[in-house]
Image 1 (cartoon, rainbow, N blue to C red):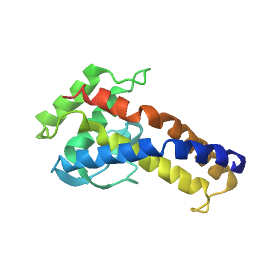
Image 2: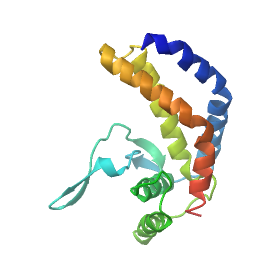
Image 3: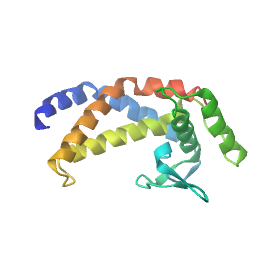
Length: 173
C-alpha cells in the first residue's frame, strides 16, 4: 500500500482545486437552507432492513445535523439508483420525493444545490479512507491497504462529482 502513496498524493494534489470547488459548492448549498434537524445522513438501500413490522433504519455512524430536504433528495437519488445503472431512474426519484412531500416534508432550495449532501459525503468518505490508510485508527495492514484503494477510487470520481450532482439535482426540481 505504501508504494501507492506517491501516486495517491500526486492525484490528490492535482485534484485539490476540485476539492476546494466542491467544498465551496457544499457551503453555498447549506447557506441556502434553514431546515436543519438531526438526521441519519446516510439513507442508502443497504442501511434499511425490512422487518415484520416494517422498515428499520440502521448504521447510524453519520448521524448529525443536516437539512431534512437535502436528506430526502439524497435518499431519492440513492433509491433511484437501485437499477443496473449509475444514473438514477427518474420515476423512482419522483416517487421518493412525492412520498416525502405527502408526509409533510417541504421543498427548500432548488437545483443545482439539492445533492450537496452527496458531494459532502463523498469528500467525507475520502477523508476517512485516507485517515485509516495512514494508520490513524489502528487498523491492520490489510484494512489500511483497502482504505488506500478506496481513497484512490474516490479521487478518480472527483472530477465528475459536481457535474453528476448538478445533473441528478435536475431530476428533483
